[in-house]
Length: 104
Figure 1 (cartoon, rainbow, N blue to C red):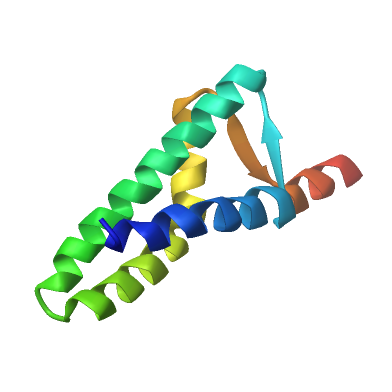
Figure 2: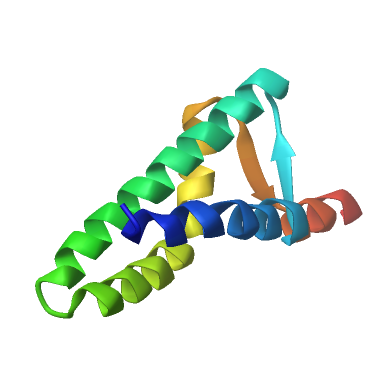
C-alpha cells in the first residue's frame, strides 16, 4: 500500500499546477461536469501509474519502479486531463490559440 502514497500525494499538486498554472482555458460544462472531469482525471492518472509501475517492475526493483512510474504518469498528465475532461463534456483548449483567434 505504501507504493500508492507517492501517486496519491503528488496528484493534487501536479493537477493544480497544470489546471491552474498552465495557459489553458476550460470551456463548457458547469461545476458538476468539471468535478466529474477532475475525478475521472484522478482515476485515469492512478490507472496510468499502476500500469506503468507494473510494466517497469519487471525490469527494475520496487523503489525505482515507483519513481519511473511517477515520472511517466506526470508526463501523461496533460493528455489524460484533456481526454477525461472531454469525456465529462468539458473542453480544455490552449490559451495561446484563443488569443490568436481573438486578434483576427
